[in-house]
Each structure stands twice: as structure tokens, then as C-alpha cells.
Length: 387
Length: 251
Image 1 (tube, rainbow over the protein chains, first blue to last red):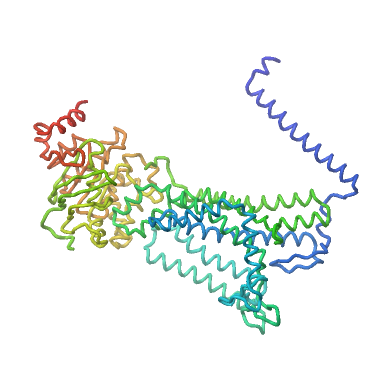
Image 2 (spheres, rainbow over the protein chains, first blue to last red; image 1 turned 90 degrees about the vertical axis):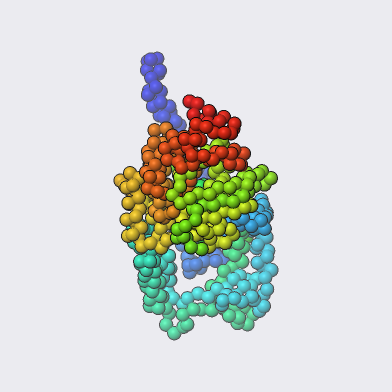
């Protein structure tokens, strides 16, 4: 018996069994205690409440919503709002970060100084403070009557009013897919056959793919448009208020701007690090071959910098996605706020928090999976690299 | 501005000065390299040999004096710099291949973009030079999948694909394991025998003896000694050269 305990394999197995056993016991105890406590307070657990109507409304939704809709529909609205805010924030933060990051690596001293100041300021102020700051700024914009106007968009203290196409939801979604395809197809074609076709011909194929996708998008829009109204619905002043178009509430704008500016300062550092990680030697080699500085940038520096950035960037994106939960601070109905309201109204705390966690896990794990996939696809091959 | 000028020296360096801040890296260097000439530059580390050859294709900017390459003066004129870089190939100590492109792409990219060669022609040229450096079978691999010696031979092929008139070698064997040095030197010897104008910074004294028309010894930013190899190795005049040679050849 004693000799058996000295066997490495036996020991490891025993430890595993003990570990799994105590974990299972702990979970079981938690569930049993929770059930007894819930029963004592007269709360019925389960997911039946999902199909009851909420009785309250949301202030912003991309889907039609009213107080008679069931909870599950509201959760869907919350997730879509979070995704909408998250993607807007991520895209803007990436643009800001790229510009600031490039400024920080530039040879121009003024640009470097500006970039550094930007990062120093916005990286060191808590996100929630920045959200409040931008919310205050945006709610102090002019009234609808004195709105700032640009490209058919109106900027007021009640929000940003943007023109929307007068088409059915399904057609709009299909058209958006077409636009994504128009961007993605040429990139994909470019990757699969970098040099297997002459540069000129490849460009032709890529342009054709993009044009085809865009054209099909236009056709879908034309077919899906509501009859008898102009294709674009422009916001306009009627009486004291604005009618038409889509209203982006100040809450959303404040959050998007804050995430863009705060996230941008982190992404700027990632971008800078990525460019720093590219060996000087590769760029010198490219220059010595007679490639122009622009070609050196696009063919050598950027592709190598991207490979260094992506893993850290994925991490940052996941972080920023979670930052959308700041919505509750200014009253934007993101997923987290819907969950908080649901807890107040239904009392189904455990179930709802479970749904919240599952939702964020699903979003962020998919994001991470996509990035891992890209990382693997573009990873440098071989282990004999130096310099 | 005529790059195909067939008379005059390939490279002429007059009174070249180079500073790094207050450090005087090159002091009044004068050197003229004839077409087809093979020059080996040696000297202790920090003596300015790499800096000098890096000035020839403007990887370093000189602070004084004149550099003329194939009749074109190297100055702030971007057109001149481009023209010179097109005609001057360079091989680096750490190979500096583009790790995200295949060996073939490494060799094709500059001819296609800088010389505007059609793809088929660029590929034929690339394969021919890969054959020449004896690694045609590695064309579809990535640099990271090759040994150091193979990578350096790809780097030589990549430079040759631009069909340059002058080749610069900046310590091409210093980062290689001993057993790989020979395969790279072999390629360089063959290149020399074909009449390429070469300027090599190297400590391979055997190579210098075999192919160099002239050996140049630099120390502290100056050319200290300049002589044909047999003379250089047997009867050098300068004390510093003798000391250096005894250290390199001592073992």
C-alpha cells in the first residue's frame, strides 16, 4: 500500500480524483443552498420568465421594441446594442490608435510629441470619467433648431440624427453583407494568390469581385425599398423636434467616443510596439533593393508589424468589448443594462447573470477565435529567423 | 545620370567624412573601385568598414566629401539614390530576408516592382539565380525554414535578381556556423570569377587571398593600408595592420 503511494502515476491520479471530487461537491453544495434559499423567499427559479413581457421600454434599439415584448427579445436587443457599440468603438479606436501610433513612430518630432501627449493623457484617466466627460459635452450641444449639419446628418443635444435607407430590415442586412463581401473578397483574393498572377491582372480580378458584390448590394437595396418614399430618409426639423432618420442618442455617442479615445491610446502603444518590433535589417534590405519608402512600408514594414500587433490587439479588443458595460453609467441600454433592469423587475438574479456571462463569453470567445485563426494563418513559418 | 556609363570607376569616394553625433566614424576616406575589381575590406570592429560600404548605397548618409557610383553622384537627390540602389546589390550579415514571403517571392519582388519586369520573366530570373546559388529546390519555402547558409545564399540570389553592376557584402559569413561558411564563400568566389564588381567587408582572409584584387585595412575610421593580397599578407608596412593580421591569422 505504502509503495503504491510512492508511485508517481498513482499519486497523480489520486490528486486528480480528489481535485475533481471536491470541485463537484462545492458546486453541488452551492446549487443546493441557492435552491433552498430561493424556495424560502418564494422565488421560482427557471427560465420561464424569458417569455413574459417586460412591461418596460428601452431608449435605444436597432430592432423594433415595446413594453409588450418578452424578456428574450430584450436580451437580443441588448446583445445587438452591445455589439453595435462594441464594433463602432473598436473600429474608431483602431483608427485613432493607428494614427496616434504612427505619429509616435514618425521621424517628425512634433508628431511624436503630440502622440506622446495624447497617450499620456487619455491612457491615464479612468474610462468612466471619460464617458461622463463626453456625455456632458454631447448633451451641451445646440438644440435641434440650431443643429450642426453635415452630409445630411444633424448634430444636436438630443443626439446625432443620421439618414437611413427606406428599406426592409432583411434587405438592409443582406446589403450590408454585400458591402462586407466587397471589402473582404479582394483582400482574400490578394492573399491566396499573392504572386501567382501578374500584379495588373490581380488588381483587375479584385476590382471585379468588389464591383460585383457592391452591385448585388445595390440591387438588393432597390428590390427591398419601401414603395412611394425616397430611398434615403433624411432627418429634418418639424416644429420643435426632429423627424425622420435614425437618432443615435447622446449616451451611445458618448460611449463610442470615450471607447475610441481611451482604447485608441492603448492601441497606439500596440501599433508603436508592432512597428518597433520589425527588424531594421529587413527595411534596409528592401531599401537596398531600390524599393521606394512607400513600398518598403506596405510590403515589408506593415505586414511584419501587423504580425507583431495582432495577438496583443486581440487582447485589447476583448477588453474594449467588455468596456461597453459602462453603458449603465450613462443609461445606454447595452446588454449589461438590460440584465440589470431585468434583475430589478423579475428577481431572477442567478439565471439572468448566467445569461449575461454566457453572452459575453460567446462574444469574446468568438472574437478571440477569429483572431487566433488569423494569427495562425499569417504566422511566419520556420524557426530559423534572426535579425 | 547615365547608369549604363561604361567608362570611369564603378565607385569613387573622395574625402568621405561621417559622424555619429560627435563621434568621427569615417575620416577623409579616399577610395576608387574600378569596374570588375574585387575589394576586400578588413579591420577591427568599430573601425568603420561597415559604415563605409553602407554609405555607398546611402543606408548611411555621409556628412562630407563626395561619393560617385557609376558616374552618378550620391547626394540628396532622391532620383540619384534610387538609380544607384537599383545598380548596387547588398548582402547583409544577418541575411535580412523578408520572412513573410517565400524564397521565390523574396527574389521576385524587387525586379517586379522596381524594374517593372513581368511576373513570368521575374520568376525565370529568380529560378535561374536560385539555381546558381544551388538551392533551386527551396524556392517555395519560407526563409525561416532554411539554414543560415541557405538563407544567406537566398539573400545573394535576391540581390543578383536585380542584375546589379556592383555587389556589396557586409560581413556575409560572420553570423554563420563554421560548416556553412564554405557554401556561401563558394558562391561569392564564383561570382567574382564572373567579373562582378565586389566590395566585401569580411574577415575571411582565405577568401581575400583567393579573389581580392586589393585588400584594404581600416582602423579608427581611416584607411590604413591598401595593397594587393600577396603584398598585404607578406609585407604590410603599418604596425596596426601587422597586429591585426597576427590576431586573425594567429590561430
